Length: 306
Image (tube, rainbow, N blue to C red; front, side, top):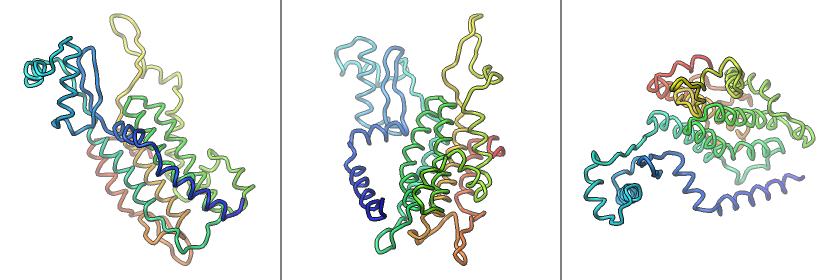
C-alpha cells in the first residue's frame, strides 16, 4: 500500500468519525460521568452535576410517580419531590476525585492529539502513519476501561487497560519501521519489552495489569462475602483509587509515545525534547506533578508499585 493511499484512507476515516451518530456520542458523554436517581423499584441515570435543572427535576418526578403508582406528576412533585426526606431515594455520586482523574487523563491525550500538524509536511513513513492510526483511537479504549471501572468491574477494566498499553507499545515499535511486512509481524505483547527501554515504568504497569487481569485462586476471597451463613459472590468492587492510578499512567505513557512517534508533525512537546535529532523523555514533565496531586487527594498507596 502506498503512502498516498494511506493518507487518503486516513482522510476517509476522519470524515466517518465526524459523521458519527450524535446519539451515540451523547450516550458516551453521559456514561463518562453520571448520577443515579432511584427508588427501590425504579432507576434512571442522569448527567452528574446537573441535579437542579428542570430536566432532572422532571426525571425525579417521573421515577417517583412510577414507583408510587401515581398518575399526577404535579401531585408527586409537590408531595414528594419538594420534600426529598419523604422520598426513599438514593442518588449515588461517583468518587469526584476519580472522575477528576479520568477527565485529566482523557484531556491530556486529547490535547496532545490536537497538536498534530500534517499540512505542508512530508508524507509519514508507513510505521509512523500506522502508529498514528492505532494511537488516535485509544481515547475510545480509555473510555471503555473507565466505564468498567465505574461499574465496579475492576478486573475487566484492567484487561482493557492492558490492551491499551499493548496498543501503545505496538505504535512505538511500528513508528521505528518503514517496511510493511515487518510492521505486520509486530506482536503487541512482545512490543512491551521495546517500549520499556524508552519508558521503564511500562514494564511495572504491564506486570501489574497482567497480575490483576485474571483472578488467581489466592484472590478468590476478594469476591466472596458471607451473608446469613451463606457464601455470596460479589459482582463488583470499589477500588477507584487503583483505577485512577492506572488511567493516569496510561495517559502519561500515551502522550510520551504520541510525541515520540509523531514528532515530525508536532511543534510543541510536553513529554519529550529533541536534541541533535535524538528524542529524550522529560523526567520533570508537568503531567507527572499534577498526576501526583490527584493521586494524593485520592489517598492511594497503589502508585508506589508502578
